[in-house]
Length: 130
Image 1 (spheres, rainbow, N blue to C red):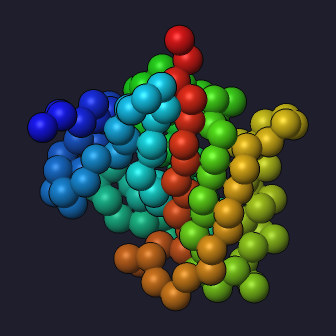
Image 2: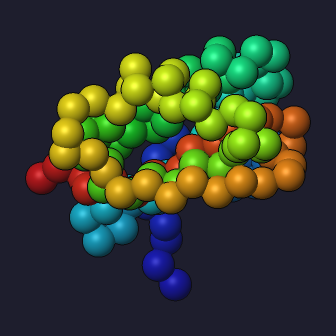
């Protein structure tokens, strides 16, 4: 059996172990990042939507950084949004702060009804720099 090459951002390993998943796995030159939400260090959600989206991106960037990547290495993104009809434009304005310049990564946006108390989640696949 192959052992997964798991990447943990600083200071959050206990949270991932408590919830029994890996924040990211390196494989075949890519980094597969689990969905990141706007959770504080203790796992609780940021209460306000804009702050939650910012924290989700900060959490994503912490995982990318732990693997030696940046958002510029991201090739594919999936976002999950509770009530996208009323929140998408607001979320997308905040996301622009982190998105960078063109060319942009692929993106799939999915509307969902529940995200464990969160309103936004982002997962990504990045190419690990050589």
